[in-house]
Length: 247
Ligand SMILES: Cc1cc2nc3c(=O)[nH]c(=O)nc-3n(C[C@H](O)[C@H](O)[C@H](O)COP(=O)(O)O)c2cc1C
Image 1: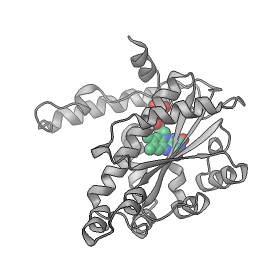
Image 2: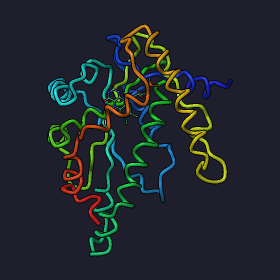
Image 3: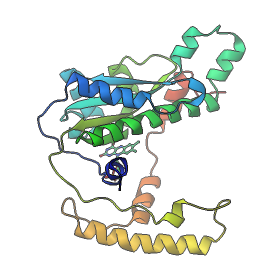
């Protein structure tokens, strides 16, 4: 396996970090790697906020409820950002409608996420560990307030980075035929169901035997729990209040 594949295949989320900080050069390397991701029509519709202020980190931890939002070597917050284009544009009705469309919103969230995953691979290739933090959307308005987020910008998630202070087992992924279908979406629903049943058995063993946070669970049960309650329903209104995804 080449070193790039080794880095990618070795991924696991890290939630405990040593006290070692990142140098400015390391931070810039990660940001530059993020910037080199492909970007739809060259829009580069994202901004990365590095949070170093202790008070702000504590406030963001309170939003998320997760200690590693505060206890890490560096915290990046990835934002979908159409403000630059808005501010540079002629602001005629058509431009505003374009920027406020679902399509533009998808472009910005995809752009930010491609950049984020590039940042992750870069960080992991440097021996660092990472954890994405969607929990900053537990109260997206508060996160937005803490980070002075303007209209046309959405804070999507954080990424906590630092030197790993634990080595969790890797979480298994679906077998390839679940996620890779040839020549169209898979038609054989029974086969897909069977694959997921087998996967659930595997996941049961994984949760039962892992060294940290053991429990009795399956992927299906986890999804059932997650989607049987309404969470973060305020995000829709927040995004629209930011003037995005309304046309
Ligand atoms: C967009 C996004 C948001 C996430 N948010 C959180 C989070 O708030 N807290 C957390 O502990 N993990 C979070 N994760 C990490 C996932 O739980 C983790 O990637 C997944 O369970 C697979 O585990 P692995 O990364 O160790 O392979 C997030 C991952 C993504 C991609």
